[in-house]
Length: 331
Image (cartoon, rainbow, N blue to C red; front, side, top):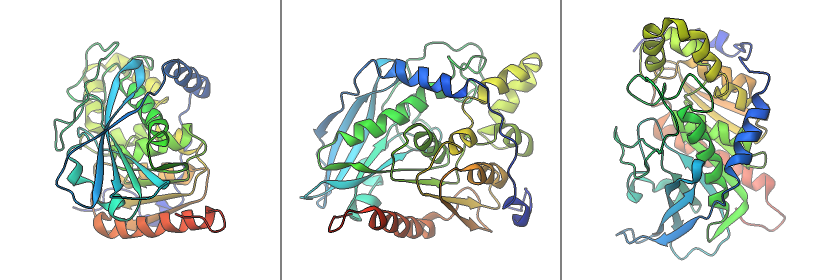
């Protein structure tokens, strides 16, 4: 896979003008206010597994529209809390899968909350949550164009609210320190982590690994890979709706959420990534409002740093928690 984007020297300076509607903040304030009318009402049910060193809970909580969203909570077995918690969001067309797919954070001593993606989970990891859509219209196969002509109907309005509510659900979990929550994810999950950080001002840290859902205008123009290609295909068929499409997307561009996020953040980028081209990642990173660092994997595609980067993430989270721990407190 060859380099498809700007040289890294230019990427470090790449800070495009944000495509942001004037009522962006009001839209999300109204959206979250509407969602908050229903309590999160998280339920944690012990889930039997053959994992001897991890306790697993099957979770459900109330997301957008009163719909119940599935999740996993994994805790180190016999842990004496409260524990710092990593809330993790899953990549595109995948769901929460099986508990044994999520061993890293709990074995490192953290609580780990994994949110299911509504309607997804039929691509490469299974899911358990339907999407009770309120409105749609014609759409390209996939999720990127469902309801795309109106921000109120757009699929990602529902998913972004779920991501915010997942933080609330995790904070209510047994054994979790509600004041020490890290949001994390890769690809679509990395974008959702930026959304949560932009809408929940007191998260402790952000791990955005090769984040998707950033800088839609550029992403749709420089790559032929899915999922950006879904938007381009829709615009090819609906040539008279292009302005309307990108008007809707401006409410959901994670660059705009990054500009409102202040928790310490760690990004990763693969310079040969054709799914989330490097300039789309750098657009979010360079607009990020809080402290930030980015690890560059020059010869990697959408896997980014993979297990190498997980080592970096573990050290980063440990450092952030140590820096913010009360004297004599625990991570």
